[in-house]
Image (cartoon, rainbow, N blue to C red; front, side, top):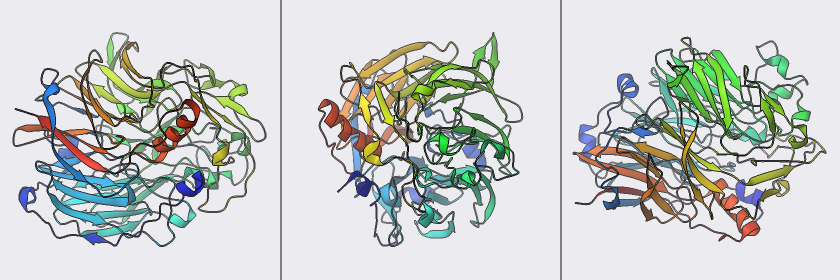
Length: 576
């Protein structure tokens, strides 16, 4: 099977199933998730993908700490029954855990014992396929669980039974749209974004009423003629298939009612085929939480030509600047730069500073006032023009989440170095629902510095000074793991091809504990408390881009070709 066939063959024929609860347990005391709880969640719960609206991936729980983490042991496991890339954190509300898996499965478990409460398996349409068959988590609100399906259907499930309450069609999967992100709940609305940038879709963020499933607003990330930014699409009709997909979950500032959402690459990949800056590709958008209106934006690189999606939103992080506290945004960009912004009272975005966190050969400089980069055209590929760029298209980091710890004042970045791509574009006819980038998968020409002493790493930066405090290097692995940091002074992460789950000292980077799981870990860890006991949970299950890249590294530097697949939920606690 070719790589392209493998990517596009994620057809699933599971029968729809929402089982009767097998164990009553914590469902008897299930607590509805309110807007107030989402704005100020209890430390013992993990109510959304990154813990809170701010996106820190931080928990104040400190029962597990630098002194006792060496005694961490598994207390239960649960096999998901599917393979491929598991990329969703365990979401926990009052002793009930919800996990989503590849192929749009949702599982409810007793968070203390691992007992199955219910399982939801959707039946995907006949002939359906997606470039990535993963899912990155569910959202909780009221007495429902919200899930964005691969087939671009938004589903509301009864949290106690797993039965479908309502379904809403977000887009037509036959035209290339699909969904992998976790929904975001904002003031009684369920916000979702779409994937499909490699198929020439037109991205958007859409809000649905949490109770009825009816659409509330829809904001396209590529402007139509006459809309602000439309003049940045200088060639007629390129905006219709311009990309800017919205495949990662946003962050939210409740004080200004502003949603910060990231957008992906432009389509096709080569900018000379769509002249202009191409707003709002590779950008962060500031959206009004009530209406979806674009308040402000920042574009990280204009006329995107490197497949450096900037789909992750910035974290809401306040920092010190010129002796005063700045209400800020911190963005670890895929292009290899770390950005500091000011978030204005109206939710607007003001550029402050940027610095490279990995070596990058595309930007000659960045304008200190506007943040606009000056591009070295020798490293910008085009139609009929090959160019090498570093980091390669997976970026200084891909989608895995960075984390911020307010006790240390540091941001922790899962990153990769010493890799490049050499691309040359061609003009392709667009066929809805098919790969349309201007380059075939065999022609991606991924390369690495074979003499490099490392490829993957974790880096810790002080957010006030911008100085790197420490880093850990991985000589024989890329880094594909999100990071969790805690009030106990710890970092938890996987991400490496050796299947290890690790704990580090947040201040020094010293590795304090490790445990080998069944597969590679791509999913974000989470932590929670039940009956006075703190647990750390993570899904293990390698696949999709990490597995593809592992295969390339096997050819280039001789790494093992295959990392075992198969999803398992692992839950740990300190042994007594």
